[in-house]
Each structure stands twice: as structure tokens, then as C-alpha cells.
Length: 357
Ligand SMILES: [Mn+2]
Image 1 (cartoon, rainbow, N blue to C red):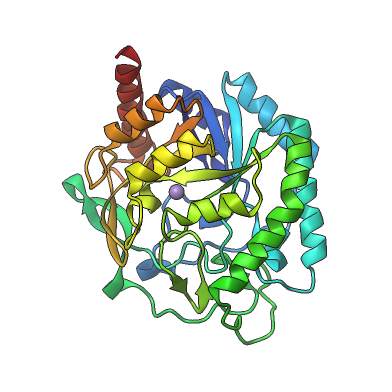
Image 2: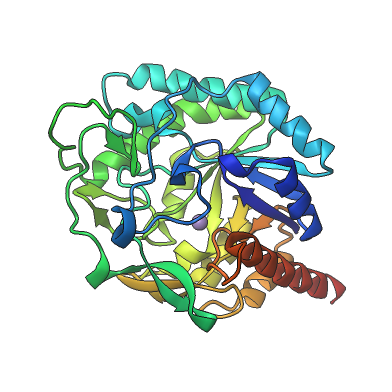
């Protein structure tokens, strides 16, 4: 098992590469989509409406851009394991089945080919119209550390997605008035199946694994749009749509733990999918509660026995990267860095301890 850290676009700096290395990480998961408007604080609906910001509108990521990033990370003594999340500018009409869908399929194929050429092994993505929407924030982690969560009575009203937005980002601020028409779950599954049917063969050729994140928050429906992976067993359906070693999961322990009415719990899920060798990389994050009421907390508190998760992964021979995902804000001048250093330190000790047994 390898230790990594996710860095947002504006955090892909030499200082943060050094920080990652100092905290014991060997791998970077890079975000190239410019969400959160250049802050490290996660957005919450009770502060900002929860929108992830405006998409850059830049062209699909080029080979030069990806390759330069990889070289910089390698020069810092680290590996670039994955890019996490497509920019809505590149694929909004795949999600929405809009008029630019064909062009957007080409965009994604171009990105995957460029990643393969640059030697970046995994593309993490989240196939969702509403995206990560409706979080609140409060002093919910140990010592009143500020954390995000989904809390039914604090959540914004589930208004339809305005035109020009998808995946909780704005891709066209000049879009005509109005909103995205309701889309049922079966229709979203069909869009995913069509997407994977076109992209997985390209990913196979490029040597890139496509890794799917589950729904966050894992509600069956949000803003009039159906969601797909809001129960762990639904990951199997995604895998079975296009069986391939390149069709895998960005397994989010936090999001899976938040799911209710499940046929398999988080331990059974990580056992099943790691046994099948279908996990690209892992978000290791703890929570307390389940939808529609849960809080994110520190890695060593909350409902999930993280050591048990790691034991299952060890038993099944998982060799990929684990990252902390997001962490509560620790009270100091560098709340993000402190939270990450804490999570990475815990993870490193736990993995080291397991590897001795
Ligand atoms: Mn996650």
C-alpha cells in the first residue's frame, strides 16, 4: 500500500510537493479543475450556496501540460498517480446529453491519450449531474474542528440545476434563464454506459485506468437528477457495464460509509472490490452518521474502523495509493496542512504497523 495526497490545482507547487514528502507521502493525486476559487476550504451551502466555482473554460489538458506537471512532481522525488476530476468545460454535454456531446467525447479521449503518453496511470472521475452539492459546515470533528457534512435541516432547498451549470460548477455564465429538466436515474445510467463504452477502449489503448468516485452525498436523487452510486453494491453495476481492467473505482471509504439501506457494508464492499482488483486508488476518510445526516470527522474517530479497512486491503494484496481525501480544519494558521499532516501521519503509522505483522 502506498501513501499519497490530493493537491488542488492552485496547490500544485514545489512547496506543497515538499510538504507531501515530509509528511510521508510518495504519490500525488492532482486536481486540474479550478474549484473552490483558489482556497483550501471546502465550500458549504450555508456559506456560499455551495457552488464549486466557475470552470476555467480552458482547452482539454495537453500532453505538454500533463508531462510538465509529472516532471515537476518527479523532480520533487514523488510520483504522479492520478488526475482527479474532469473539468465541466470539457464534458458537460456528456453529463447533460447536450448538443456538444460528440466534441466532449473527443475532449475526454484526447485527455486520456495525453495522460497515457505522459505516463499518468489513473484518471479519477465522478459521473454526476448535481455533483457534490448541499454540504454544510460545523464544529463537528474532535475538539470542535470545523468539518463538512450533509445535514438535512441545514441543506439548501433542492432547487433544479440552473442552465449553464453541472457537477456543481458553472461552465457558461451567459446561459439562458431556466434550469436543467429532471433526469431520472435510468437515463443517467444510460449516459454512463454510453460514456464508458466509448472511453474504456481508448483508456485500454492508452494504459490509463478510469476510476469512478461514488455519490457524495450518497442520496438517490438530488436537484431533480438521478444519482448512480449511492449504495456500495451499485459499484458492481458500473464495473459490469464495461468489464475491463481499465474500468475501476476511486473507492471513497467516507462516501461509502455514509450510505444507508445497503446490501453490503463498507468492509464487505472494500473486500469485494479489492478482491476483484478493481480499485484504482482510495480516499481514506472517516464519518459519523449516514445520509441524510452525517458529519466528516478525523480519520481516527467516527464510525469506520480504519484499521479494519487496511487489514482487508492487506489481505487482498492491494498495492495502490491511499489518500486522506478531505480533512477537518485544524485550528491554526495552516488548517489544511495540519489536517493533512495528521491524517498522513496516522495512515503511515497504521500501514507500517500492518506491514510488520
Ligand atoms: Mn471522496
